[in-house]
Length: 502
Image 1 (cartoon, helix red, strand yellow):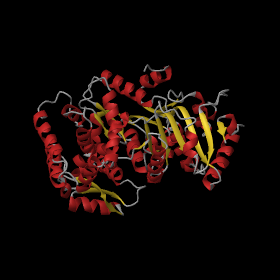
Image 2 (cartoon, rainbow, N blue to C red):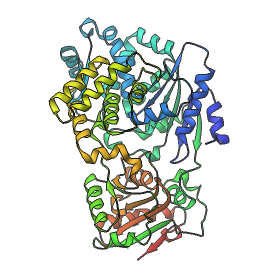
Image 3 (spheres, rainbow, N blue to C red):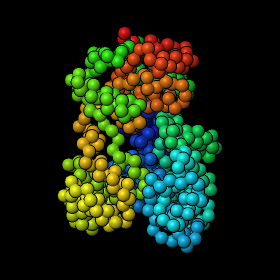
Image 4 (cartoon, helix red, strand yellow):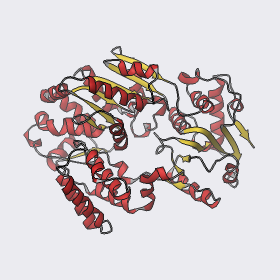
């Protein structure tokens, strides 16, 4: 995909940059193009860091890069804070009692910062706060930076730019950490996000932190609004959900791409068939996993081949070894995933790293051989982890075992082969489908969070949106009431945007 004029300008702009990128506007494509350009133009020893929230997103960036990324950091937020700040400089900031290897176990919870520090000193293990809106890892990393001159000099000497993806999902502590890198260490930041897609406020995400950077004078501000994913009718609907994008609305004479079906609990699955195309990819997105699984069962009974795709347990592993469990799962599940792919996924590895190929292949085959013996399986995984410099946590081993031995999780690694699926809209983020089916009762639109959720869900659709409106329920009434208020701000009514079917 070629760059648009605006994307080219973003790629060519030096210094601190913040990009507001609405859904479907090609933000990953733009960021990858900018990373490639700045790596190629760099003539010093310094490198970049591309920081994401998930291992999957980090892998996507790495796979898209057409330049050599060896030596550059491409990984998750937590792994950057842990591997680049906490582990190497904990002793310098807090004394010799912290001069030892430490592991990470987010199951371990504490109520205060001092309690967390004491636990590291005694147990050599990083944990997390009991309250999920506080972030111990990033609070600790920032305090280490402020205490340790060596840590500050190290980051300044190593990195010339840090890219942070999905910034709207950063919490207060993460934001303070990244702003410190920019304001105090003078490392350039490239921040990309969209506060309209902030669906994790329940776990501490602060979209206002993203908005605050828009006001910083030293950041060049861009807004990417051109949606390349969804057709114009779907763009119209999603843009009208927010004041800042409502001006992008343009009247359409054809309203056949968004269908509102007025239904009952007894006939919704039958009415879908009139508008759903079995030959095109589709997803039914729900708020809860229970509803997504139940709806898949109902649709299959109607000869609609939908499959429920839950989030695999290993996706909840966010420590520095998270990539390892994901790579092992892929090796065991995906036939085309080889030992060379595994090596490529090693944070410090490259495709040409043949030194460990033989031993690695032997270890992975031993894990495969023992996949039906839980104790031996975990023993072999622990041994492989240790050989790569990690200490396997029992909770992570349990999540890996559950992932590879449970059929419904295996499907998540073969999603390209599944044309029709049900899942939560949280799990659908970053995905796209020809057709998307939504229940309006999942979005009461009473607050920003509900609007964010609805925006993310609707913008997964490329060509068709089908809304299921179970008439007479309180949640459905709230949806219509609050959507009408929102549309009234643009002097529009719902029937000017969609086809309503009784």
